[in-house]
Amino acid sequence: MPDRCPGQISWHYDRTEIIADGVVHAIGVCLGLIGAVTIVVMAVKVERINVAPILVYVSGLVTMLAFSAAYNMWPVSPVKWVLRRFDHSAIYLLIAGTYTPFLAQMKNALVSTGLGISVWLSAAVGMALKLALPGRFDRLAIILCLLLGWSGVIAYDSLASAIPSSSLWLLAVGGVLYSLGALFHVWQHLRFHNAIWHGFVLLAASCHYSAVLACLPCA
Image (tube, rainbow, N blue to C red; front, side):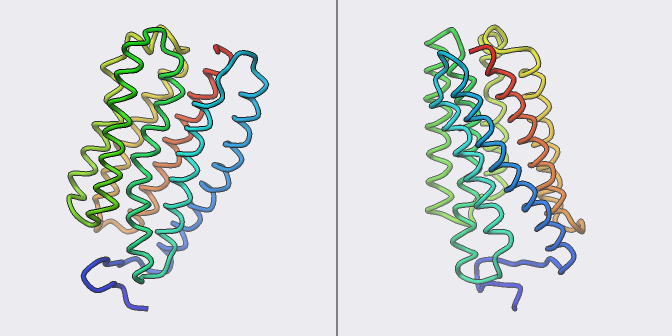
């Protein structure tokens, strides 16, 4: 199989690297599905909790994990190029989806609504660009994802008063892991850089999942 889909994708990973990345993705998809079912069941059992934000969050999480696995494991072909669009756009969906359960718990409705609209609007623009203009502005897209992910800092006071301190710490640790992982994502000359990057994604997503889980008793 050639390592390039003409004019679109170059894929220079050897068999061992692909296997390592496949293992990371298999773990991620399995944990994501188990975690999604678990947290929804737990949320349903908590009285007076709005399950909708949790459903939005787990939908974004599972979608991101599924598209990432499909894109990275698919053989080099025109189909892989299509999957790349959905994989990259799903990152924005995950970011916005992760914000949703925390925004739902904020006491300041004005701040919550304003930040929610800004996050989802930015994510929608990011997804549209990735779907319509694949392969362009990839480095810039990484920066935009990081900025969108850290934009919640502007509402720190409102978040801190609405969610447990453990959730705040887990959110921060997850953000740091995503940011550090991005360094390996662009370090393409490093062997196993793709598997390492996805490993960081899995660890960061686990931190954010734990942060959402820690909020359930507070609802």
